[in-house]
Length: 102
Image 1 (cartoon, helix red, strand yellow):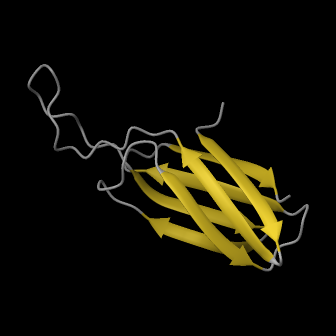
Image 2 (image 1 turned 135 degrees about the vertical axis):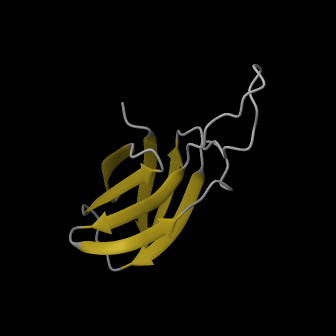
């Protein structure tokens, strides 16, 4: 199961994308119940594409909250186009998904 939930809707030539990513987004500054620091684990890059076209690249750091919500808009897509969304984190983990623009 993907860690990414995404909706993409086209209205008046503008595609609105809303996404929720399940990720712990640990800063590396908190301590656990054992008194030891919880290692940093956060998303560093989110990318969105429609076909070969980049529509978003976001560089994130440890200041983003757990299970981040991201919303953005772009022009130039058509209903039925596939939107690809992917992320990679500081530990090299990654995930991606595709959704048809409605």
